[in-house]
Image 1: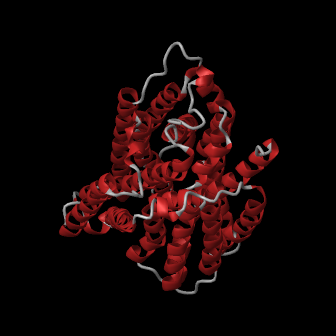
Image 2: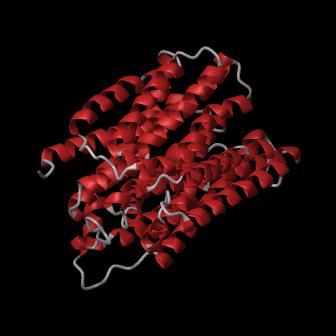
Image 3: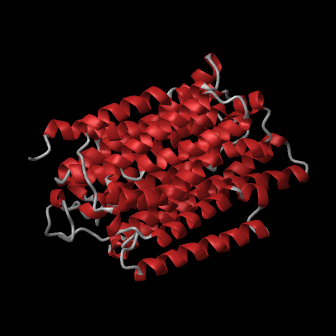
Length: 481
């Protein structure tokens, strides 16, 4: 019996709620960091682990979780992840010391990985019609932007009006409702069985390589790029990932069948995503720091100031991206969005120690809305070669490059900004001027990263054939079948 039309859209609501919760958690924590540091007596290095303890398991487990979803059932993996995330959020909200909070953040990251890894895999198997799939991906992208905007404002409200534990406790009812509704509306799938891909050695290699690599990146600000810590662990991480690829080429039941990398669109979309999110995530983090440290904005004021960007991304992804992709193709829509993002980053290179919001910050905030074209197009292209049996793997791969890009971007651009600031302070510059110049350097590099993403997209991604109607250029239901 075919899955009911209304059930598919109800299932999309459950999937989108998880996406919102994951993004909400990331943005809501950012604005509460000073309060957490003050109440728990954390050092700067200890405070960074409130973020890193989440990022490391999240990014490191995505690929493994996506493949396991294909083998044991994507619904099972999704519901388990949400349950773990909700329980960990309760633990984080009840934490009275840094050790408990960091452990809870680690469990939150693991739960997010289990749930997020299979979300797109479930989505593309529910929506096989290209037009419906485009609309579904646009709605999913919209909820992500909504999570970012809600998190920035809600984080300030909860922290100022109540206390920082509530930024974690707010996830608990959302997680519970998601699990209960998911049991009712998500389609049951038994998976292919562990015997079809129970590559234990491959699982150990890829998980260790990703976890070690992300740990190395997030600790760059502490140790520096050229330290033995960074170079040694980075080399070991690359060696583990290379061994994983070799293992997948020779294993009888590979964890990640390498056929998924034969698609130019899949490879191009994942590389493009890594580059563009390296630059875009810097916008969210570094602009917030600039407004608070240089311009003197408070937590709530920062969230409200960044609201136009999140609202713009969400509105364009919901109301325009699917229609434009149906008419012009995902590749063209992606390229147009990247141009807008490059322009936004270039405008940010003009900020000053006494910048006005309307003159210096609002224009790039509005141009960042181009992300509403970029993100859905990348999701469409990144899942374009996913067979039903590999949909979880493709989803896990897509989410892995997303997290690696974000972590690497923050590490690189934060380090550059801090280095430039310290250099100017040592030469006698005022603090506000030195910090502003550091942030301008990071925005310049961000523009270069997104420009590189444009070059990859225009050279690697395939141009749609002129004789194929635009509405049928998107992903077929089961490519390769």
